[in-house]
Amino acid sequence: MKKIVIILAALLALFVGVWSQQQLKVDFTTLDGQGHRWSHSQGKWKVVNYFAEWCAPCLREMPELNQFYQQHNENIEIFAVSFDPLDNSQLKVLQQKYTIQFPIIERLNTLPWGKLPSSLPTTYVLDADGKVQKQLKGEQSAEKLIQTINQLKGL
Image 1 (tube, rainbow, N blue to C red):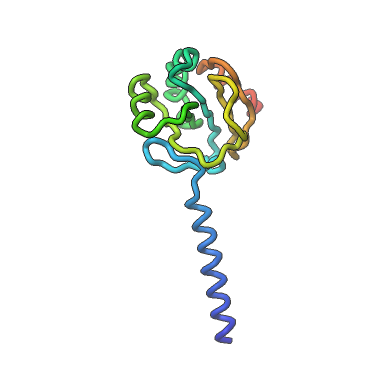
Image 2: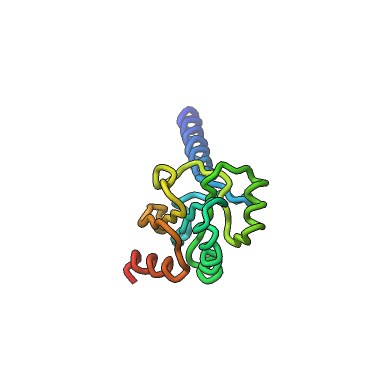
């Protein structure tokens, strides 16, 4: 009986350890230090926008993305990703210089869409489960983004 209790306790400890590790695992981190997972969004859809400072259309769409963030951040998460490999201090400079009001991803561990985009700007729309539903190339407006998401949701 004592061996069974020890085995059950060991199995329980193993289960709790694996479960804890999965809960703490992050797919990406934003500049504010917050860890995120693509699949843990409390029912929120996600918009992920790739940009670069040398990309004029990327910079032209930033005010629209800020507007989208201000209007929909309660229901939809939006993130920016620099196409260029920049460190955190360089990303913070860009965030201030271009008044990017929504979170910038500092480190991506996993990409649910596979590889880097072939052109900029590129925006990915992910459903509440973290699955890519649409890839949008070119400049986006706040209105076009919400129309796309509503269409994908069947609204």
